[in-house]
Image 1: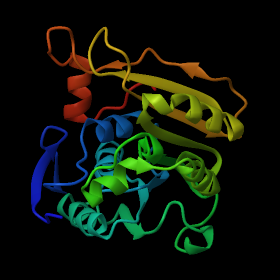
Image 2: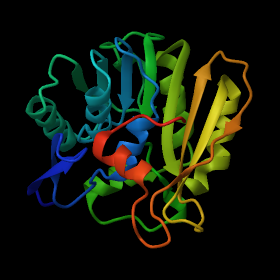
Image 3: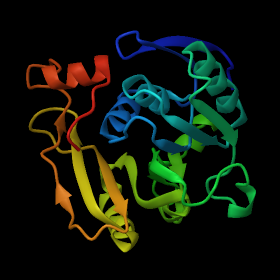
Image 4: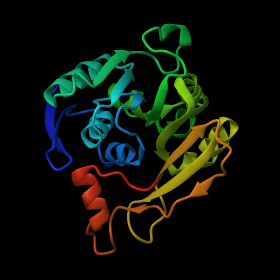
Length: 249
């Protein structure tokens, strides 16, 4: 795999992010996920599958004094993410550790159970049995799951979430029924936001959040339309992508 890196702008250049030229590359999904997280100053946050760190860095840029922990199992991504944390001056706020999200809980001695206000993730989108796998190893790790992927990731999130803590995932629209089923087992106040690539097109992705131990019912939001019919980006989306503002998820 090529180890060539690019230095990319996020949030209109407010963040500088190193990424591999070939392999998994963060994009709009990461910024959208960060904008959907309703964290408050001083919250403790956990990102499962830290990648290059774009989600947590966007979140830290929007909300001051967060205490963020990231977990990442890809050694190459781990190196790059630590470099990105330092480059963007968030070493005091963000720490990232090596860890397998689908591994044993006993391996997570570096964090306490039921201790996080916010937990968020972009789990592997695609079920291995349904699609041909990408040849790039790094991209394969990020994109290809298995039949237990969502269940295992959510169990990890629940293990480390406080009572009243919020869990927020982004994923491919084909996985919405399974995600609602899994979230509904243990979480309440579930909110679903569909993401439409273009006006009058079907949703391609969604953001889902839920609150541990809440009894509030599920609700759907209007959704995010990333591109108008004329191909232009709507003002609210442009503001979100350039400035990382939070939206009412």
